Image (cartoon, rainbow, N blue to C red; front, side, top):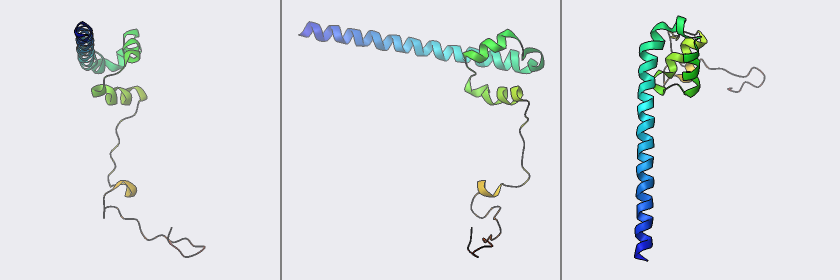
Length: 109
């Protein structure tokens, strides 16, 4: 019985060690990918965007810290800033909408 418990503990310890190693490898690969995107690809986007290297990295997954920048460059969109708050997205009291009533029944919409 004691031997079985020790064997089970050894298996669990090996499993945890393997999971830790896998997690470290994943974090290292994400760090390397971030560095590659920031130093090699994004500064030279117009030349690099159609390369096989970018396509391969894209399919491996774009790291979250650079994903927004990559998507905005890839889609050709630039961030737009609104000069005034959008009424339904603003906080209390900001950008209040005038009183709207349904013309058919006179009730508020």
